Image 1 (cartoon, rainbow, N blue to C red):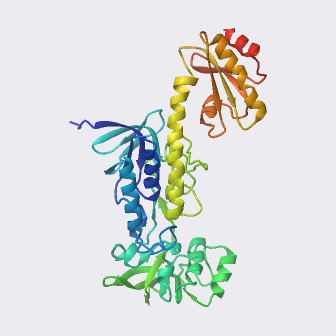
Image 2 (cartoon, rainbow, N blue to C red; image 1 turned 30 degrees about the vertical axis):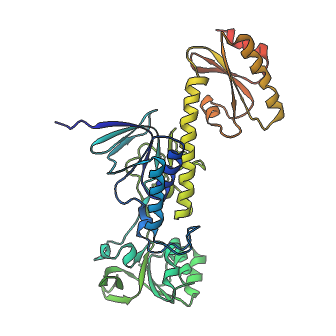
Image 3 (cartoon, rainbow, N blue to C red; image 1 turned 120 degrees about the vertical axis):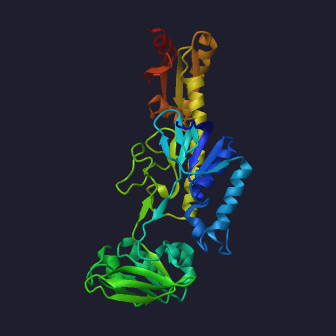
Length: 410
């Protein structure tokens, strides 16, 4: 017999507790939204595996990533956010109520923020799991280049990211040895990057090779490459290894509901909105140019703010705008425009004269256009005539007579 799940209601469910999810939690909880963060692994995400973060503003002593994200968690909890360490098994984000299910619980939310991040694609070579992240294998030159000053590093991969990150590493490392699976002179990156890399005196290339194994005691000290044509094993001594063979976004659960790019990352606009109302995405799980703690925090702040606005505007829309108990008119305008401000007096006059029979309200889009989007138009000003809780039609030539005549017409 299937176990009945406990049902809990929240304003916001955040899936993922990396820097993006934690920041979103801070913003949502600060706005007094009931907020829960669900994380299946480590609170802090991939940042927790970074030994030193050199480029996060406000932390000049190069702390561990975990030190920064731990503070974020404390801050979110202090604001009132709850945390649940468990794996999300299924989601239904398509309805007005969003459903997120774990093994024991069913969470019903007004809004969901997807901050599930991504995971680096790994080689699958022998012993790899023993050296991931802070034990010799890294996936971010921007994060870890400075800590490799005057060291020898190995780079796996020959795509644009691998070669560009390898070039960046030469600013710090003594030598950068690149394992390329193709014949000599052939890479997967663009021609300009290839020419620059081949001309860089700090870069060496080992052609026709893939990783066979990683070796070392407490820390990686040797990457053993295998020649694809001769099967010869080539031990390469190094201080650290960087793998740049791609990332895998954690979007398996939502790929049938949320619009993704061909690589599986979530598509959003600059407000972190997905294709679904009330569903937002932040951090490495979304299609973006730079994946860093600093950019994840920015995404989380926007997503948290956007979720709060969405919930507030939905409530206003249902209670004050699209009323089912009384037909009415909604004036949508931008208060920055003087002419549009002047038309507010028409709505005020109508409220005074006909408020008993009809409802009238004003929606200023200056700070947010969420309600205007729900009304179906984003060019202003206009009046939306509401009948039986739905938009009946729009009026562009705004006057008392036009509005009243529209309301009286059945």
